[in-house]
Image: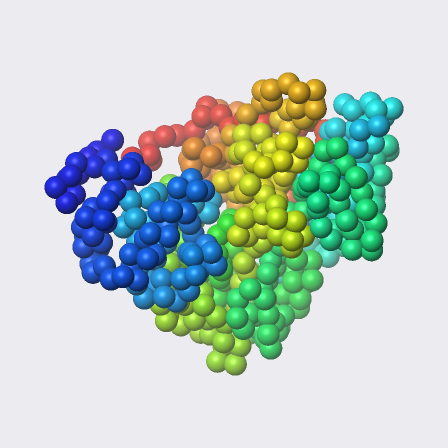
Amino acid sequence: MPTATIAGQEVQINDEGFLTEYDEWNEDVGAELAQNIGIAMTDQHWAVVKFLREDFKEKNQTATTRRVDKVGGFPTKLQFQLFPKKPGKKMSYVAGLPKPHGCV
Amino acid sequence: MNKLLVLGAGTAGTMAVNKLRPKLPEAQWDITIVEQQSTHYYQPGYLFIPFGTYQPDEVTKPTQRFIPEGVNLLQGEIDQVFPDENRVLLCDGRSLDYDYLLIATGTTPRPDETPGMAEGEWRKSVHEFYTFEGATALADTLKRWDGGRLVVHVTEMPIKCPVAPLEFTFLADAFLTQRGLRDKTELTYVTPLEGAFTKPVASAHLGDMLNTRGVHVEPDFMIESVDPEGKKIVSYDEREVPFDLLVTVPLNMGADYIAKSGLGDDLNYVPVDPFTLLSKEHENIFAIGDASDIPASKAGSVAHFAMDLFPENFLNHIQGLPMTQFFDGHANCFVESGNNKGLLIDFNYDTEPLPGKYPLPGIGPFSLLKETEINHWGKLMFRWMYWNLLLPGKELPLPALMSMAGKDTADLS
């Protein structure tokens, strides 16, 4: 498994650059991951990321954009504004989680 | 008397009762299956109806014909399951007790979940082909088609038979070419995925097939609404795709009673163990076929392979023994590509579709991820197999678990 140094910390990543260890993430890592894809984090960004991480802890899988809308209360439109073009992929990348499944 | 109650007499539910009835002594086990429709539909045939290849009566037979002796078939609509009381309530007020429950009510298209989709233009210039009514209505519209913008669209994954919208596009290309209308038709494929299909190697193959047919692909398109008056679909990131004819795959969801009963996830699929299909919450409930949340294709082949392993597990489980058969998410799908040719893909939870030969390594007769005529005939022959072998629960000479033999792994990076 490849590793990378993010925010001064060594983390394990997959071939798409997604973190593979839930516990290797912290807010500094999240901020730098966001920077990598051209996103400047705001409170709203952090609120979404926080929901994703909490939800993952409970369900052991990454919430889809639908779930972030219906359960998290962040409308899909807003998700697209915060994480343009590919919110599902970008949100999970910043939150240090696997890409949401449902793509089978 | 033990009671096994099966909800839904589609592909998975029908196979289940046919396989379990001979294994459960009639003196000890009562088996009841509840179904709201008196007709069993051969759903893979819907794809061919819009192009006039199949007539509507070729995909229907009475539900009763496939229910074996010794199984009670109740016609009715399910209102709610009370898992703590081991009881199911039907909409007409009947109440059914069970010891074990199999949920097999599948998944259905929900056009009303997307604003504008099910409104003014529904079944006029906005169509779907995942229901009998939809496929036959689309056949009428295509008969009168004289050119313009034809948009094939997928709303959100997962969908039943994820290759079907691609097949529809390939068949539409061939159909329009035969009618001299291809030059007058702009064909666009709109998908929420990054490419043609979900898995990389197959996505590249299928994407090439769209390119060579002059189909424009609009990827990463998450639909916000259909504008029936402006005749366009609009994405959350404000892209617009205009259409004269929209053939969409609406959002797919499990049955509403599942949500009402507190048994489902966001899309009303029942969370189960992916290897045994046992509910994660209830020790006496299984979800089989498309009704579960397993990360496999929602397809008849998946239901079939899972059902090859299920009876033995069920027999162990009711005796309090551990289940020993582990399903691998095996799927095997013919992909029609037009002009009497087709591809075949074979994959599971862990292995994506790869090129090669199936079922006999190096021999076939079917070729994986490659267009051949014999694949097409395999698809057509399958209708006979479905009615005569698959639904009655007879053994097919195909292994339930996926095999790597015959697969070419060179494309894997």
